[in-house]
Length: 166
Image (cartoon, rainbow, N blue to C red; front, side, top):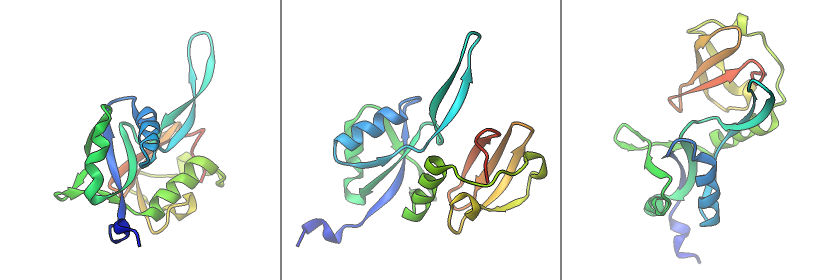
């Protein structure tokens, strides 16, 4: 039927220029490339006001779902820098991990847990946060934030107390 039906697409991690994640995602979607920039809402405080700001969960990175042979197409946009590589090959993320990330960042309906109960080095089952078959290790924790290393992805996710609900 379709000549491209034999080519399977994968989710790749694409580095972007700083603070260009959302803009590049929109541009790639306009180009017909499936792109995803996971975001979270943070409350930023200035001297005269507070404001809710949508910030990327993965700074300077987005996820793109594209066939391997067409990966070069993203570089038609100036904000795309390079792909993330792992062990000499472009790093891929499973569709299940992307969907889990979507459910965490978009739904945010998880049971709260006190940060003080978490300890560095502690292993966490991330299924409670929407990840499937992913283990996380607490890297750093204080009263306001927690850093969790996602072992299958090899990335540190930072949660602030206002956003950490699991």
